[in-house]
Amino acid sequence: MSWEEYTKQLDRCGVPQDGRDLIKQAFLFAHQAHENQTRFSGEPYVNHTINVSLKVAALRLNAAGIAAALLHDTVEDDKASLKTIRKKFGPEVALLVNGLTKVKKIKYQGVERQVESMRKMFLALAEDIRVVIIKLMDRMHNMETLEYHPKEEKRKRIALETLEIYAPLADRLGMWNVKSQLEDLAFKYVYPEEYKWITEEVKEKIPEREKYLETILPILKKGLNKEGVRPLEVSWRAKHYYSIWKKLSKKGMDWGRIKDLAAMRIIVKDIEACYATLGVIHTLWRPLPGRIKDYIALPKPNGYQSLHTTVFCENGKITEFQIRTPEMHRDADFGIAAHWAYEMAGKKSDGSPAQSQKFAWVRQLQEWQKDFKKGKQSSQEFLDSLKIDFFKDRIFALTPKGDVIDLPEDATPIDFAYHIHSEIGDQTSGCKVNGRMVPLSHSLKSGDVVEMLIQKNKKPSQEWLELAKTSLAKNRIRSAIKKKSLLLRPQAAQPRTELVITAANRVGLIKDISAIFAGFRINIESIKSETAGTDYPIVSIVFTPKNEEQTEKIKTRIKKLPGIENINLKPHR
Ligand code: MN
Image 1 (cartoon, rainbow, N blue to C red):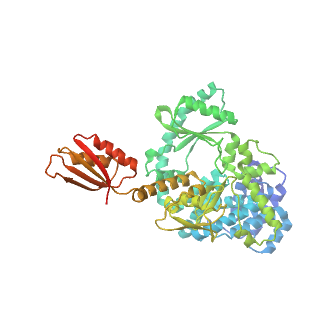
Image 2: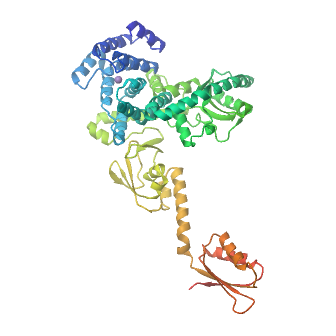
């Protein structure tokens, strides 16, 4: 691509004119540095860095960010060329290129290394958010061209790494679109057969769905008009393949239970109009209970905002609607990149509490990084003590295998254990955080590697209810305690009891008495009947009641049976 063509592309991305000199220098330098290199596709290598830089430009990173993207593969771990970069492009670009060179050394080697990779990513993030944004775009282009990689094994490894590190990272940065694109690109290589099946099924179903959404459009617009709401944009989008597949796996691969292959998206000018639109939709069509989600009042931890609802639409077809403002729409695509652009422009966001809190953790991260720089810690110590408040009110802790567990602030190992599995929670006997034993009351921090120690047949205790912060853990502890008390209490609290009943001799008496015990879910230990030569047999029943009250209830019920003369209670020897 010539410089002339390239600048036209920059114009299309809305990159301002000032700073173009810097970008041009980087553009020429990249051509020189990669002069005789080619990609697996046979293309000149520089096409890769150009593509990455344009993706970065589309996310509105500044000239230094675009230049760094152009240069991201030029420094191969030697200080001389980084020096050259600093001299030619200044400290800002050099800082970014250095960060990108460091991040490049992160090699995925199976799950046990995933933890370390994640930590290093967050480290880079703390230094400059742009490093991670550029890295994500680098990965995006590598995924787009992965088919040219000659080794199948490597294609799989790279795709798996994308699914397990880069997509979750994009999600946590609020770059929802980037996350979905990375997932779909990786899906093809990690689960090729499933991918083929899903794409074929969806391709068949989508046109029909599209036609249907076109028919509801005029009805919706008329309804909105009546309320004076003018939508800026109404569109529909197909769900991403990977997310459909994940949903299908949860629903027993039953397409009938996938309600939203496509969703209507409505963009209106402000928050007020969002709620008005929701009202219009609910007067036109009946909403599905439990499917109204107000992510405006309660944004997702990654900052995502929108109103979602699913309704019984025309002809009873179940249809999802997403309603948002243009700002929310842009943030869903750009996530942290949008936030970065705000900061750079010296503009404050719209001032709503949700907006100002959204990326508060980023500022915290940077503050903390500044403190670190003032100190005298080595980077190894820094890594070891890495404690990042990644979200304002959420933390993420890692299992030794590298699975990320999202928890609220102040969560304890008890919460962590129950969030992995209730069996692990119930049998918890201790916990190691970053290799050190901690009490179960310990507050977990983001980035902690948490290893739960379990003991077979151990049961949770009442005091765990105080330690647990999440309702999920509390509920599971409660139900485990309840189970435990049902199992233990009869033997412990109540002695075995014998009821001696005198009754008129009749057919079905024993059966009626047994039925009463069965009604109380009590196992009868023994039941004897003696006639002793009279018409009034004596029935003796040995059992263990749950409590005295229960014994009384049983007595009352038995008394009401026909022919009962007398009931005596005696402790069983
Ligand atoms: Mn690259």
